[in-house]
Image (tube, rainbow, N blue to C red; front, side, top):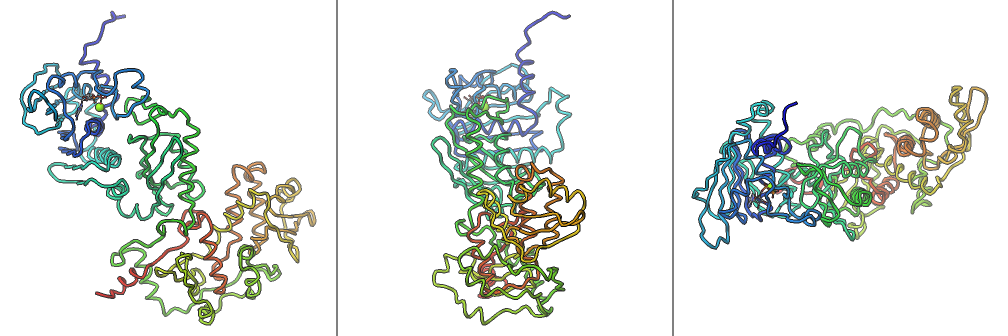
Length: 621
Ligand SMILES: Nc1ncnc2c1ncn2[C@@H]1O[C@H](COP(=O)(O)OP(=O)(O)O)[C@@H](O)[C@H]1O
Ligand SMILES: [Mg+2]
């Protein structure tokens, strides 16, 4: 073996650079963090060739004293902490004192600075390094603040240079870092230029406005505000509703005390909060800021400081989960803005505008669809159990329609409409009042702002699902005995499942018995599923038990099971509803948690405001 010797400083720094400096974007991150720590109010970033050629960051922060310039570039030198206690309560972004030294070891660097309150002089000084340790301080021309220029990253480490990607890719990484930093510090003014062109110019604004500046109007308009405070924690920001969910993690920003983090615990809490309303292959979009006492979080976990360790991880997880869950489940009537407001400019080629146009085009279509009602003749008359168990149930019962398929003409029941004038306090009914049914699929309603279009099946499905969940939580799913029990042919597997799972079925509101060795009888079902095709429902439920095991159906698979039931119980397309029933559904949407999206994360309703309609028809132009 070779003899052991102490490595030269330059090599030590180059090794350390391996941890923090991976590509231009990692340099940019460290340098921007330094500017923020220096209290800058204005930060300019200039990149050449994706940062491969040059990264230059200028700030108007506190600056560095002439005699500390060289120290700043030396490993383990920092102005941010000095004792172990400090390490346990980090308030700055930096603290390891190694970024500048590492960057200097793998690039040609110039650090120029002019300290704001320099007693001796107000001159700027600079030091140039090119991977070597020949450091000389020379005068510079710079107004107060600091300018760091990093040229030719990895010029002296060809092996690392090989791993760098194209100019465009490296720029996109830099832009991502820039976005994170800009989100974290909305009061700071930022400029990003690439190859002489301005890419982003951000003024000093509120954090909500900055979110919109960075993620775009569309995000903001599909997102709800979060602002949750506990004794020790404060979480604020915006989370997008499922309709805005992405196919990748590209719009997920979480900050702990202003530091962007990508942390498993936090991701898990968010994932859980969205679990019920987001399709598995979709990713939620959010920008969230968590404020926590620095003593309760360890940021010294990873050299790049993107992971953190919470002292009370469980409590933090719970807090985040509940805050997001609450924000996402606020019923429409409580959300500050309608999440489903159609925000696209009607003049643009938006899907919404297209839809409306195509509806207009096809208005000569007969108002019917091929309506072969699949309902069985002998099903009980309880058609709208789920609607019935709220306020107007007696009214509803008396007006329940005979089961009839939508005829050639869907009656827009003008008489009913007249009978239901809009009440004075329209604001209390954000979903408005029904006008009629469109193509057997959508309910049209008017509210104080304009038109509401509801996907009848999707909305009903969601409401049933939430109701089933609550009922099951209380161990009290209301059941309904069938007037005429339904008997159907069953496989031997299904028969043995029924024999073994009487209790489970009962908990879910079903009573099934053996009719013969090859047939089962359904005698009781959950009252709110009265509209379902009972045979299909029974097969589906038994399949669920067979596929996942009885123990899972009420635990891990509970929500999926209930979703299956809800889907079967929800009102089918082509069911003709009366105006009262439609209004009942609208009221239920208003009072149901998460009614704005169906169980698959699709929206259940949209609002088209009068202003948007006016625009579409070019009124007032
Ligand atoms: N833009 C800047 N403005 C003022 N001081 C700076 C700036 N950049 C770096 N410094 C000084 O240089 C020191 C070393 O920076 P760095 O190597 O990034 O370590 P750290 O940020 O962990 O302290 C900082 O502690 C700070 O005092
Ligand atoms: Mg630093």
